[in-house]
Length: 148
Length: 148
Image (cartoon, rainbow over all chains, first blue to last red; front, side, top):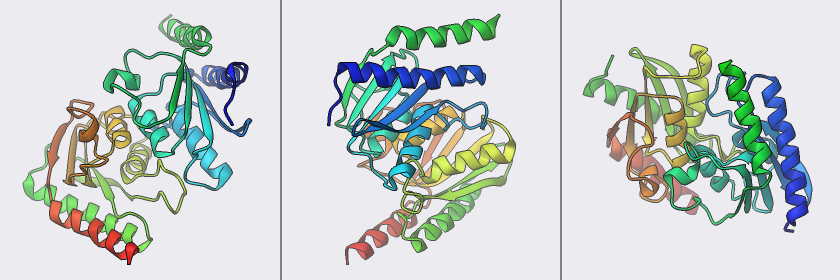
């Protein structure tokens, strides 16, 4: 079941709430949720500082949580919403998980997958720019804050 | 401190022992170890089936374990030994961890990072083909076995 544009904004708002949680924990504010059949089955935010683990990006944590929730290794019916364009690691993790739809907010011209690849490394449908301004603003605020 | 060729074979043998553990657990037999200052600080093997988690590749698990061992988010002094060419996800994870040297055994023309990228996504030194035959053989044996 595909989500319409209103759903995309709704679920991205949930991903933004995760990013806000990250912000309040002094983590780079990126959040993600995974939706199956219109329901959120996993949500996560970046925890690289807390866990001292560079692999603890929001998407990787959300994928692991979604797989646990479904007891399944693959997530072919799922959509992942993430506030920032996935990096190469996360794009490949999304591809490994067979997630069918990827919706992201802000683009990441420095570390986003599209800096390295001509196209996403799977046949997933890609929707970009959903709540992009809010997704970028929380990141900008975070970096302004830690520099001051 | 750089390792010489003899060290590379020795540590790849340890990675192969991890791959053998994976084989005995019905996991695709790929193993990895991470070495710092001549000592193994983490070892891991693929656990995607056991954990039902597509992100549980040997390299990702070894990076998380090494970061835990050192209490550090980055592993700039470390070498990772892995029996199979890292996939895109693992190559990017290695890059995120600032690992300085990557030694792998068998090439992976289907899913290896070099299928997608012209070069490794960091400045790490790349050494390929160490114990490549043994690394490839255990994979071949595994797939022959599960198909029969």
